[in-house]
Amino acid sequence: MNEGGSIADSSLVSVDEPPLCPPSVVAAPSVDANYSRSDLSFRSRLDAEKSGRWSEWKWQIRNRLRSVGALLECFPELRMSAEINEVVARYPMAITPYYASLIQRLDDLDPVFRMSIPQIQELRDPPFLKADPLEEDQDMPVPGLIHRYRDRALVMATTTCAMYCRHCTRKRVAGTRESTLSVPRIRLIHEYLTAHPEIKDVIISGGDPFTMETSALERILEAVRSVPSVELIRIGTRTPVVLPMRITPELTAMLRKYHPIWVNTHFNHPQELTPEASNACTALVDAGIPMGNQSVLLRGVNDDPEVMAQLCRGLLRMRVKPYYLFQCDLVRGVEHFRTPLAKGLEIMEYLRGRVSGLAIPTFVVDTPHGGGKVPLLPNYIVSMSPTHTVLRNYEGMMVQYPEPRYRHETEHAPIACAETPEGVWQIASGRQTAIIPMGGERAVRRARKSRVVSLK
Ligand SMILES: *Cc1c(COP(=O)(O)O)cnc(C)c1O
Ligand code: SF4
Image (cartoon, rainbow, N blue to C red):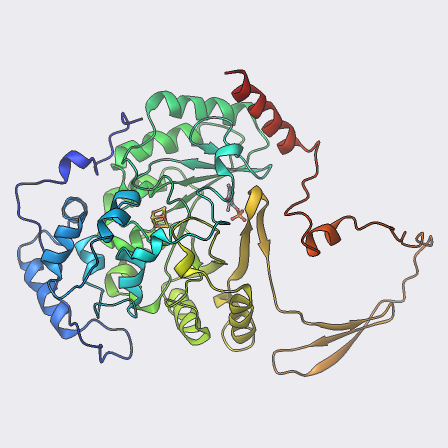
């Protein structure tokens, strides 16, 4: 599916210019408590800027670090085991010089290092991890379109990203080959959306759609916008974080033609909140595009309530609304990033009451077996009776909420007590991993699809 013309075609990787090393990095612990760049990397970045091309996004993409060799050339102090080649062979690596310049120390205590530099732990999978735990491939009625919720669909516009996050939930596709939706596939997606007017909200995702040429992305937006029943177009992109120079006036001018457009991005740590990233978000918001942020909760990166509070406040200053905080999915290759669910709840407990309500994301688990997102919150209900509910606030204060003087018109039948374990209890007791109701629209669609597959 390579007709869409991704600019990040692998043929462009070997270029005439020698690979430019990102600004050098101190191997010793950084002294910058506030996540500002170390002087050393800043100086080198300026050197590169003198060459004039640092701020060209295509130059950044062409000069991504794509091999262990390129990595070691740029970070000679880096120590890596030979096994790392196996990691890169299985899960592609790419780091923009810009993003590499945000690394402050060369070990995985550095959040940017941890998110971008391959680790041998990626090969150590417990058996319950899956390549596609959300079963996206089974909710794909046409290639490249995931239809999970009734009113929303997600289009995988490209498999290319500017930087391949080591924690990516789509490790099975991201970067395995860098390609974009072909014109015939865009046509199929257009036909599907037209045949399904219940879809009101289309998410253009990937990969990272902003790695595409503006004209190639526009072909997709045009096709989606021409379906009258589609109200909203959302784009998911990490370029404001890893390639902020991509947000050019040419791009925002194109996007404005397809309003209402929303953009969700993916900041995970305050170290990523640079002036360049801020400019990128400002340019998008000034083009009338509301922005949200979808963080992933990652061990050793942002599994700390105060780091998360700083990140969320920083995002609001850039007019980006923290939208979701995702629990790490059960994806192969990411075990070393996973945190217990309790960590997310601890962070939510810390945020509520301490930071602006606007800064508080919804903590969600994207459930295995394609169950979709489930929000989790600490429990604020202490007790309930038909007349009074007892709530507690973040300080631990307990208050009474008197219920309205409303009477049920009919009595409810008493709850039947089953003799054998049934329902949710089957899961809670570990007998089953899921209960999936049959007969809903989506279940029928899936059954139809698996029938088609089995006929082949
Ligand atoms: C997350 C997701 C959506 C959008 O969900 P929202 O809660 O509306 O942001 C839609 N489709 C798929 C497949 C998703 O994973
Ligand atoms: S930008 Fe998104 S799709 Fe690409 S590697 Fe990162 S998490 Fe995955």
